[in-house]
Length: 134
Image 1 (tube, rainbow, N blue to C red):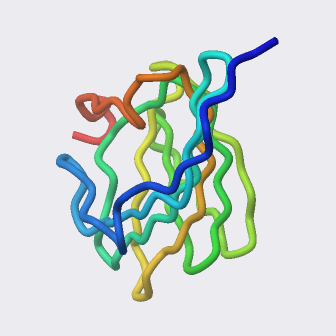
Image 2 (cartoon, rainbow, N blue to C red):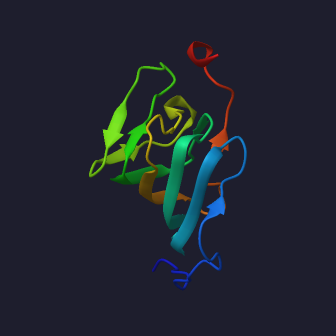
């Protein structure tokens, strides 16, 4: 039988700025738990107008719900891709799926994100921008 860690609320109260290279972004962990070596993290993120995540990838899979604004989300080919409010999309894990999340609009982008990742791994791993973004 798989071991299940107790559900626990994250001690963070309110939103906290995300670490560099992100700018103009803040997040709040709603809940996290671990099952059979996988960590599940449910987090809300706000990207202010002009804010961005920095180029990065994830070790696991993410499910993202856009709850406000329009998210600009190019992959390493730099082709524009916009996810509008109400959209749910999947971000596959691994360096081959590196991307940028940014807000090119005039209102905050609001996201609810479910991370499913190897226990103990970071939420994201920063990388240098691809040649098309330099």
